[in-house]
Amino acid sequence: MEGFGLPNLEAVICGCIPVVSNIPVFKEIWAEILPMFDPYDITQMGRMIVKTINMNTKEKIMILEKAKKITSGYTWEKTAQMTLDLYQRIVK
Image (cartoon, rainbow, N blue to C red; front, side, top):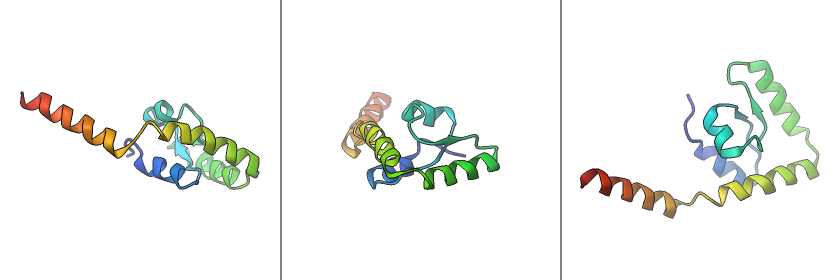
């Protein structure tokens, strides 16, 4: 079971390319920028991991540049403010 995927954001920020399942939330966040696989197909997962490991440096840099643009929209401050706003709406 996967959720929003904070580890994926953290990996990208640290300069690693995560290989993610192609569940709707990850497609929505990453718009297929990151390597994706069917979460019910372990063979496909393995192939995607190997493919990502074997990417040349230029490909990796290109993916990370695109992915880092996505991560810039997510901050702890923004998350905290949105959570507080939601709590305040529920209490009122």
